[in-house]
Image (tube, rainbow, N blue to C red; front, side, top):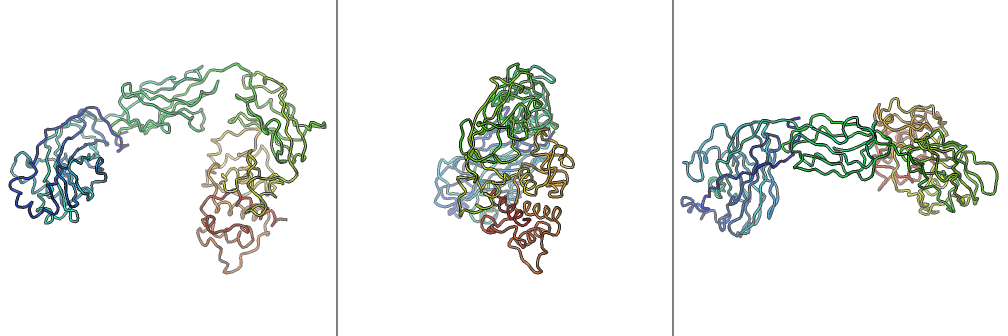
Length: 623
């Protein structure tokens, strides 16, 4: 699509116009220079030593002209360099910067532009003036103040939108110098003559071609390809040279069909073949549908885009190998395992969820006895089966987990090395986190909720109370703390369309069913009427509002009315959330939180420790 990316750049052919010098001290200006000595010590007009631009390319929104300049003499006082550009009416300078020994932005100056469109154009045609040019206009500006040193060089880059005008054109470039404090005042700049007291490069010829949008000419794999090798390097070939910055991994990628995040990869672009390669960080999965996605914003070197997304679908080959266990949790031989722990195993390939059940995945005391009552769920994204005991495990007891030969992969082959067993030993009855000790903030809340199995720590034995919590996780926590019933029949898809984009395992209640339970009980209304944003970090305001809603809807009358004139610590930061914060604080739901310092921002993310404290306060209120 034309004019979609005004920052794309391109280089097909380089052209340099003839250079015409002002001689730095024209005889007619000698007298004036004496009165301008403080500013122009040593004659400081910038000398043009090169002009770089493209010709024979498409007329686009990202055309550039580079003007390389040099300082001819040292100075004893600050000055500003000036640059004037005459270009066809219809073009537009969208920005001007300079870099090198000096760096900065060129400030547009209407007074200087007026000088060139009048006085400069009225000057008799000579080596440095070529008179009026109908159909053309001036853009001019000046640099930041600097102390010029002889031999300093820098390049002024002019970004120009040609607005798609094709044809042969000319442009003129003139440099000079300006007073440090009054750069746009003619009276402080030799009546304006200082603004051209450098050199000129006139009548540079530019030919621009008719604009055209780029397109994809071929891909590997091709559309509808099957049995594609999992080690394939996807490639896309374009009809013309492209701006590599628009072909990064965020714009051109491979992902599984049906949604999901782009696969991790590094893209590379070959300017000669006009080809982008998607170098995936790991092989694709066997027997899986994928798409190659090219964002419609992918642009050619002059800024024109594809306009619409380009998508290619393909299917990888299947591998007939038996699945194997890659890792287990708790680890084999682990000790001090928390009593509320789940038991899980991760496989090396997709598994048949129907073969994962209480009959094929068991947890038993090694000393004997019946299997531990538990639910079995499977997370296909992680290839992970999870055994969740219906009650806490016994303290200081050795358990044995067993995966039987009934377990199969998606390819129908049984689990290798079965029965697969491992053992671990639970810790003491009191759950202990290495980073939460008696006397620490939120200690009682964290310990109390952990012993009830509502919160868990990390595998390294820590709780990480300062870490943030995501909205889906909080939905699970508040539903558990409120004792809300959750089952697989609940659906979180209506009204939240972003939940429909996530795989809802029929054997795993997280996150869909917990979100559905929270929505059904009016605990949450989502971030919008149609989105829940499950993996966005939850804010303090959102936590407080959901807790207040939960109590008001599930335990009406449990919260006392806010006393008249009661002022909450966070103040009136929001019409809805602010009132809920008043209700929460006046009812003791925010007890134990500092509400100041790091916790003073109700829109900030609420930490794990803070969430545990608020939910614990809620549970204590109900008791």
